[in-house]
Image 1 (cartoon, helix red, strand yellow):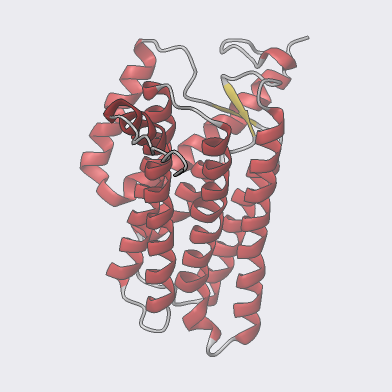
Image 2 (cartoon, rainbow, N blue to C red):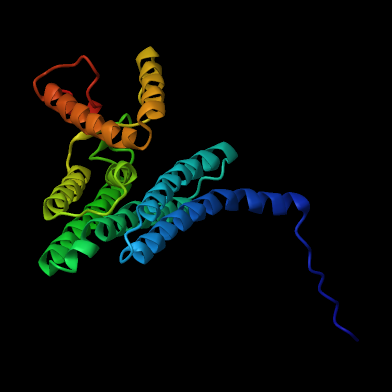
Length: 267
């Protein structure tokens, strides 16, 4: 007597759509990783050549990585497919896209060609870029363990995405590789300074701030300045962003409450 044949049930169309829906946020995250990896490849290939256009393209890819990084969370919330897997994948992607990729870009852009004649400068630049990567990784680890324990209206330390955009804005504005030692030392200060801001306890406003007319006015003004200044707008924006944030934190320490302080810092 023959044993009964097993029947394999094919997934229904609804089940296939459900699987695709859950895979969509991770696919967007992978697009972000692809942009970060592309930025690294272009920067490394361009290091001995020094094409300004290629460095700017590498910086633009980092901006695109940031766009996809914002979209994956939006897609997950919009489709109701948030998961622990997605959270972990996003965190790993952030280390690569906004830690390693901008550090490699700045290393190639600022130090490789100068290092041919000044090997010590090359090593110092590499160390400064590593500090940026290390600070970014520490910043992400602290964020992951502090979710739900801090005021969601403020980040503790500069977000790694903002840190990456801050250093990449220099390449966007002035894409020609650095030509003097003085420029290289200034770039080192920028990279280490932004890394220090990421691991600091300075509170940076998040996107969860209450929206009012001043926010919309600031957005409109930023768009106008972007149209006028184009690529140099981003460097100006981050000078203002960091300066205003530091001044706001100092004002809170002096007791000023014109803008609400983080809840866990109120006395």
